[in-house]
Image (cartoon, rainbow, N blue to C red):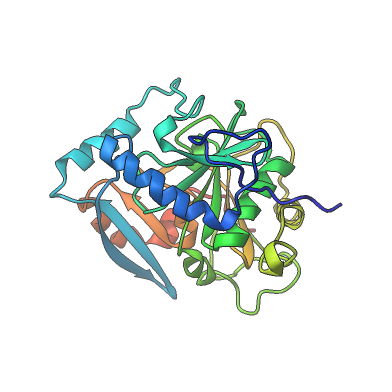
Length: 307
């Protein structure tokens, strides 16, 4: 079965003609930049300024970001996210000033209100679906469309235990991060699902078939198929409702699936990007504990152990 890639429809703040033409996905980032500039001016977009360090653990290098000690208002923004009422839903509807565009019939592209990384996009379902619900073909189509066109990393935090901050289903995308995932791939990634023996937690890598945008990347159908292969390798259901907690990471080259057992190590929350070498802590003091324990051991402690 071949799926139809999600297409970017008209921006939401433009008047719709009787038969609105679809805008190309290639314009998505330019549209996001325009919306970001306006949202910064209005205060709707509240980026968190961070400092960055690097931790090496064996052959792997991890980026660690923390809130700048010079940015007290940014620290307050982090506190706002952490202490937000769990019943609050920022996506139903999303803030108009943060909404970038429609993406197919089922999703909206929305700016992350408190981004640590520039151009951090959320792919939000229009109607409420729980973050623990199984991913649908429409979800795979939407994620594949953006990754195919713009590269970067798509990811999904499957429930609060997997690092999700909201219960309304939302996939995510960040630019210029695919090389970080590549560093964790096993050498000579085979066609069959596999694990990297250097990683001590249960996981599955799947090489992706290039049937998507101009054959540069996977389409939604092959992304869904690869996800199913990874679930079977790990003994996870692919369509349970609710799903057990997991992290999903997707580049043009590969898919990574990691079953989760805990949300945090100490007081450090772990989400999908950690398995691509990117960690976030609230202050610099936490880095010393990360360094002493080791990033690999930290991730292993919140993941299912490898067989």
